[in-house]
Picture: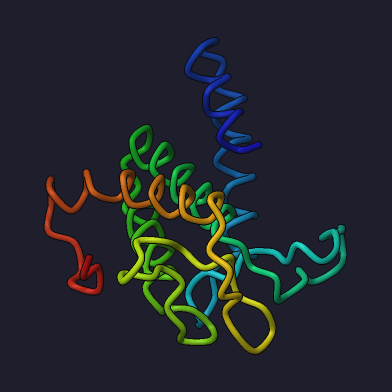
Length: 154
């Protein structure tokens, strides 16, 4: 939703859309990033006002779309926090997550279907693999354009 509001600002020029986009993405990011890096909101239940986000059941598609939204916010605002969070989110695929388990499988080129409570789901569905590839294509432009942390050993 925040990304859609950013596009609404780009199309209309109405700054209220940009202001709400930045506020709402800030709220969302405050619930996604913590000492473990990124922990996307669980697919097991809804995150409702006043609740804490659900854990476990983290899926690559959510991480990938977060990376792509951060890319758009960085492109439009040049706020470095968005770029840094983008790298942190990408590293979720490479094992920088709460379980310290790799989600991208370099042997097969596939991507595991996510993180459950105690383990990575070893199924490698097309949606997960495509999500990883979209995230990687997004982050690659930063790897080539600027020096980014070496944790992105791809």
